[in-house]
Image (cartoon, rainbow, N blue to C red; front, side, top):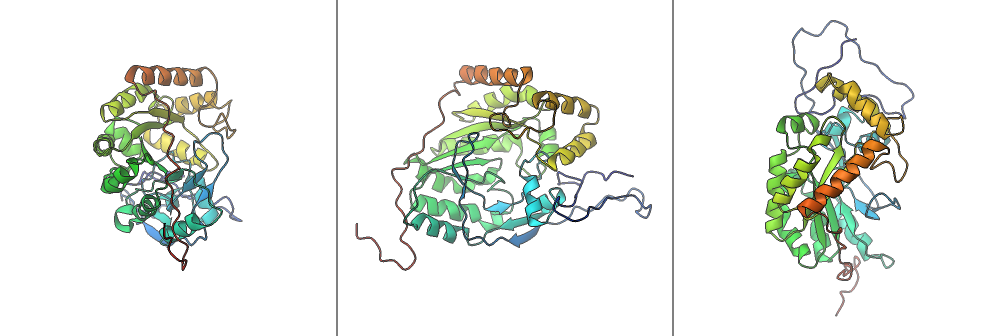
Length: 356
């Protein structure tokens, strides 16, 4: 069987059927393809996602938030390692190419959010915006969905935390600066490498590392608190860059830093392994061997307390390196506690406006 070659501008070269399907298909070479013909990258398809609620809630001890909003399902950035890929199976789509090319969006998300914030029983807690998939992925430039949500949060003075690898967030510096004046926002930039070639392979449609650093500096100058996440940290691929990424982020205005070890849930194990063998065949076996050492002999460990950091000697070394780099660079300040006291609920639909 001839393996497909990587598609320009896309992260995965595979498109396996959803795990919920009654049957699975396997590709094979029948000899009919013209020799040397480059495959045509598939276009992006938009799908409407209707939902009665946009706020998702969790009780995970591994993440510093209890509420989140994901304006999009699927992500054009096409990151080879994205832990959100298996979620596309719930849409009847593939976690491979479908994840990058079939994007579900919520056109009425801002109206639904306004209704949820107006509910009598709602209790304000910081909302993480665009955590599963990037809220500022390329489609956002045209759709403006994340900006609409930010407008509602700014209007109601609701605290929000953001993680992105997109420079498009500069567009919303006005709203973010407004929120920052009341200590209502923090923006974390995901920067996995300073090597533009490695970034193009891992994150084909995301902003370059230099562009992300420039966006971080732009928000910092606007008064928005910014930080950096080296996420994911991949053994023998980008882990040697941890200190360099943190130093570059400090120069761009970061006040805090962290990392997340590579996670490979469900179909992502096969997808990432295939990507690794296609782009780095000389070290693929070594990367996977080190990852198994960090995951107790497996490629993935979903247990709370382990899935973000791993275990063993190498995991301890990563933790020590982060602590020392943070201390040396002055990135060891505690994570900001966002202000929940300024929240003012919107008036429910059809309700009389408040006098005071």
